[in-house]
Amino acid sequence: MMNLAAYANVYGAPPVELVGETAGLTQFSPFFPGASALDEAAPHSLDGIIILGPPGTIERRYTIALALRALKPGAPLMVLAPKDKGGSRLAQDLTVLGCTFDESARRHHRICVTQGPGDAKAAAAAIADGAPRLDPTMGLWTQPGVFSWNRIDPGSALLIANMPPLAGRGADLGCGLGVLSHAALASAKVKSVLMIDLDRRAIECCKRNVADERVTTMWLDARRIPKTLQTNALDFVVMNPPFHEGGHENQALGQSFIQSAAAMLRTGGMLWLTANRHLPYETILKPLFKRVTLVTEAGGFKIFQAQK
Image 1 (cartoon, rainbow, N blue to C red):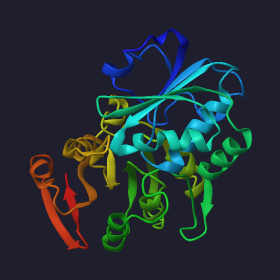
Image 2: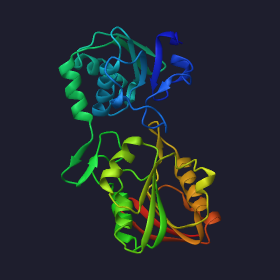
Image 3: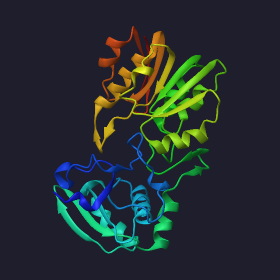
């Protein structure tokens, strides 16, 4: 375990057994509602930072480059990641960014320690490569690291193809880039849609992708909906819930989303859900909803309509 005295900031949730308790450090991950934004940190303003590297190369190099830009001269940067989820490529990332570093391995993680500034041109290129952009094929604002950032998820596409025109007040839990909300808002009878996502970057993209006065966006964890939103008042909820966490399948994620939807819907309200075919969501849908209908199965996905 390391001495955290030189590190005032953290990105993500590095394993405690590797770096110690980081709860008292300033959080910069977009997956922690209320956290600071690393892309908004002023150059040369931060003391040391520990980064749990994202698994995707573009997103990981973008994050490291942002940290290098933000660190004070001589302030340390530690980046670690599981070997099979980006850790084996950390040395290459730092070399590309012009950094000299010390590398070690512990508990199936690679750990690299360096300091800024590295190569300013290389860092600027990595930042540009990982920044938000308008995807011409999808016609949506997106960013590497956001769910299904470079294509329309086929499960969402299947839900849209089978979802009737909606009406009333609704929510999109785990809204991502806003694809389901955009489809819901095509109905003039929809009065409002509350878009919720754990990823700040997704919420920022949604503000551009779903420019509609009927929309409210919230940076929240849909598994832990606050009591103020558990109103049993909504007419509909649409969702394509995640089922991976930290690179591993976690069926409890989708189950929590379903429980949140049930708490938000009025009696008679409708949940429209897309899921991978192998996920056994029927077991949690049936106790919470009066009627559960399997609408269709195709391409490895299934669509449920559940009435509360």
